Length: 256
Image 1 (tube, rainbow, N blue to C red):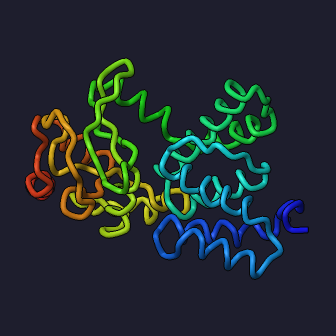
Image 2: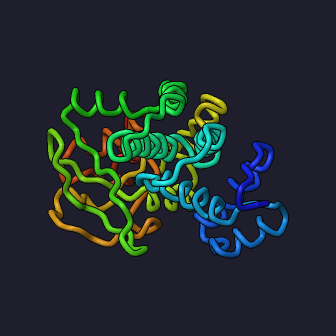
């Protein structure tokens, strides 16, 4: 029976919760599937796909297995709430890759999922951040995919300019350690803007990876710091970037 039944919507929160625990390394994927299958008459293969899809969304990879729209909707909504804006942006881009994969490679149209993506478009910050970078000429380091569990920074990707991509896992671990508060000016988006600002913050590399020219292994606690967009821009006013301590002192001096 479980092999053919569809997972009811009311069980999706339990699956999502288990998938988050797997992503954070608190439980193995096999143990999560076993526990869910024990509590609910669920298809193990479907559970495996749903757990893998969440992992792919958070890492910006292309989810290769489809899910019903309610599940995509629930995942996107709760990724935004639980992991913050940047993780949500990464996840939304991953869902777009999923649609492209099905429509272009498997020749399967997904109009309802495209409509769901459109519903979430207004919540993404990607378009605004790209516009800002093009207008200012400032290119901030961004994510690359994690290889074999190693956090690797500095892979060069050519788009219209050369930009460095960063690992979303490294960013998330940095924020989990220091909290989503600016290391320079102590600005807290949630305190200022309420729920809409919860978890939002940029992450700054203490080592200027644009000057390294190769790959390096990043320690999220040693090498990264959360900073607000204003302080991030000011840190990159010079090359190599200013130190957090210097910029904090500059703020203190300017404030009298």
